[in-house]
Each structure stands twice: as C-alpha cells, then as structure tokens.
Length: 296
Length: 296
Image 1 (cartoon, chains in turn green, purple):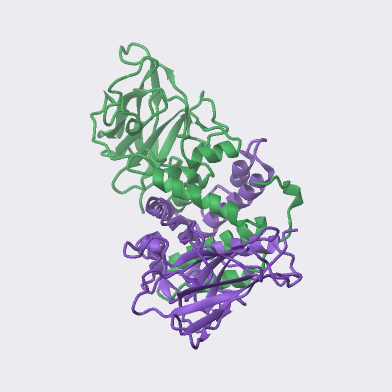
Image 2 (tube, each protein chain N blue to C red):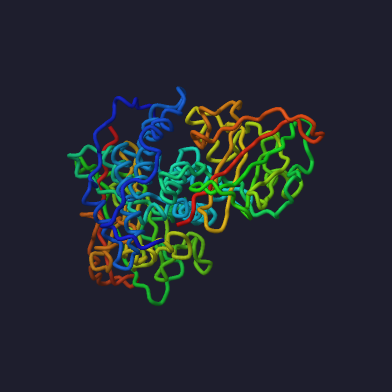
C-alpha cells in the first residue's frame, strides 16, 4: 500500500454516496427476518462508510478478499482462521461481552466471560482429582486446580455443574494442533460434587503465540504487532437452571496481560498460583471459584 | 436469528465501549504503514460500532465467520466466492467507483467503470473481425460488436489499445464454470488498428443468476433477494499512456437493470443492439466506443 500519512486524508473521491447505500439496503425483500434486516442494515452502512472514509481502492479491497479466502481455505475441524482474524481485531471479545452482559442481570456478581477461542472441542468427562496432562513435558509445572461453583445470587453451591477445561501445552500448542500430543491431552470435563466442588491436575499455563502461518499472522506482521497471548486456562461452565459461562483464567504473573494479541484479558479474570505442600503430584495450587447467574 | 423488530432496537448492552476500540486501534505498532493504519483504524472503528449498534451476539458472529470460511473454502482458480459476497452488498461497485474517480480527471468524458466480477482471466489475442463464440448454442443470437477507442481529452483515435472482452453463455455460465464450453470460449483480446477500431462477433448477452450454491446464494435467500444479473458484456481496455478501464456494457432492453444483484449498473453503461443487414454471420449489431483518460 502507498504511504499516505493519516493526517493527509483526502475527501471522498467517488460518486456512490448515501443514495447508493440506501439502494443496497432497500434491496432486502419483505421476507428478510427483522433481526437480519437490522444487522445487515447496520453492516452495509458501516462497510460502505468505511470504504468512503478511506477511499478504499480496488487493489486494497482485492487484497482483503484474498486474505479472507485464504482464511477459509486454512480452516478445518482443528483450526478456525476466520475466527482468529476476528480475534486479533477484538471482535470476538466484543461480541462475547455483549452476549454475556445481555444474558446476565447487571447486579449479579457472576464470573466475567472471555472468548471461546478457536481450540475448544467436545471432550469426555474425567473424575475429579485426576490429571488432564497425559504426557507432561519436562519444562511443565503441574498445578492442583480446584474450586467451587456457586449460585451468583444466593451463594448456594451448584452440584452437577460441568467444568470444561482446556489449555495449551508448554510448546504453545493445543492437542489438535500437535501430532505429538495424545488425543484430548490437556482438556477434560469435570462434574461438581454435592458441595459444588471440582478438582484436577493441569499445567501451569505459559504464554504462546497464535498461529502465524496464515492471514492473521500476516496481518499482525503488517500491523507491527506480536502474536503472543498471556498464560491462561480456558473454561466453559454449564449447569441446569444457570446461564452458562465461557471464560479464561489468566496467570497474574504472566507476560502479555497488558497486550494480549486477541484482547481477551478483563478485570477479575486473573488469578494467583500459590505454593502447594505435601502433594507429590504438584508443587503449585490454583483456587478458582465460579459464580453462575441463574437462568431466569 | 430471533425476530427482533427493527423499531425495538435496544441500547448497547455490553461494557466494551470506545476505550476498548481505542486499545485495539492503538495496538498497531510504529512500523505499520501510514496507509494501512488509516484503513485499519477506520475498519476497526466501524466493525466495533456495528457490533455495538446491533448488540451482535456470539452466535450471530459465529454464523458469519462460518459463512466467511465457507466462502474461502469454495474459492479456487475459477471461482472467487469472497469477492461475490462483497459484490452482493455493493462493496466492489463502491470501491471500483472510488478507484476510477480517483484515477480520472473529473472533467474528462472517459467511459464509466464497472466491477471486474469474479470471472475474468488472462486470455489470448484474437484477430479483429473474428468470433469469440467457438460453439454457439442454439438459443444464442450472434452480434457484430465493434467500436473505436479514443483519447477522452482530444478525441484522437488510440491505436494498439487492448480490448479484453468476456461474457457468459446463454446457460448463464462462463467457460471456466462449464465443462461443456471450450477453453477460452466467449472471451478474447482484440487490438485496435491505426484508426483505433476493434471488431468481433459475440453473443447477445442474456441475464443470468450469480452462483447460488455457496454463502452468497444463502445470504441472498436470507435477504429475500433474487440472484439475477442483467444481460452484459465485460470489458477491460488498456493502452499505453492511458488509464485502463474495467467496465460492463448492459443491454438496454434487458431485465434486472433496476435491481442487478451485484449493483454494477450505472448511468451511461447501457447500449442498444440494432438490426444488422447483409451479414450472414450476425443479424444484430452493437456499436460500442470507448474513451480513455490520458494517464497523466
């Protein structure tokens, strides 16, 4: 792209103004669902305004189309590059926040949400107190992670809640990205007992870069940004009668908390890993409690 | 999607306001090119505003990501579904207009541009007066198309201009979409003679639907829109010392001139097919002259 300084912005050079945008919006027929009409009206208006504000050229637009097609071509069951493209411009974090705030009463002290990310997949239930690490790397530190799932309104324990957990290994890869990891390594579902409690052994998470071999990596390079995510563990917590929660726990001592490449870090999602004594399996402990908002 | 009437728009439900958007924009590093910074600043702002204005949910966003990935997966050397997705929301027409207006002096009576579309490809030069139809269908009408390429400022003829022409067959398919058409059928490059003139035989174009087996077709259905394009012939005209022009000639008598599914019809791009006498090869004639703007 040419080097046009941002302070030398030119006035809109084309002929297709708001009349043209109105024509495109009005082309939606009467059977369009009201919600889709609302979404597409706003989308078309913003995309056209963006093109006019920047005097977007055919070559620039074609380069973007090529990146979008490339994203689709790289996506498969174990990778979602279109999602990652959205993540690096903060869009998943934004829609996640909108969705969660809409679902939860604002005065409920429910656990804050964070983005799903592209690496969740369905995984079997494991017994409380077992480890999700099937082949622990030499550079990994094991952690005993446990906590209580509670009703965010009453504080009562929530039994039979499903705590679905996944994390990357110390090489920065999730099991489906890494032929050297066993199937379902570093992921598992745990069901809370009658006291609302769950427990497992996992790895102390470590920072890792998002995949940089596709259009997201190319865009990050063009934007002079790094690919790194701070150390985190992913969770989805579900229980009958409660709003489900998708979130991430961040290591308070991690790098990149201030400049997460996918903008997922929020207030209240960091936690401290403490020393654990007398446990031959783990020298670290993480207590992580979850408050679920009632569904109604 | 839920049926939320457009007149019951809800206020923004999330917590991530302009501060969040500013954080994403400010994450661009100092080595970002000024032009890319300008484009991405506007893009990120508009996409975030769109999500906030519509209270876009994770499920809705994920459905859009799925369609975008699907577009990439369908795209290959003979098909560009990402481009088609842009076309049906008028974006290619808009950036084409911006690009062309920026390139041409506004007081030059140069031929108006129109979108490239997804079906152009490099093709060999043919001799003036020859036919681009190698296996003319029974329902086709042959046309003798000819005209003069001129300097838009002086009116002088432009010799050695390349007139690159392509069109769909009467079944609505371009040759690369259709195994029954010969390679390079209904496309060719013609070079103007010393009088600036070119000539060829082609088909009278017929309306056709854009491909509806992918996400663009799905979106058109959801938007209660038809897939049809008015009858047209594509052209790219290039000559040394002139701005190149990408355009489409529309049959003035065609259906869908008012509601082209890709919004490419503009004032001054329609032409009339007239009766041709004494030519055993064609009973119709199209005179189409092209005015090129000088490059400087």
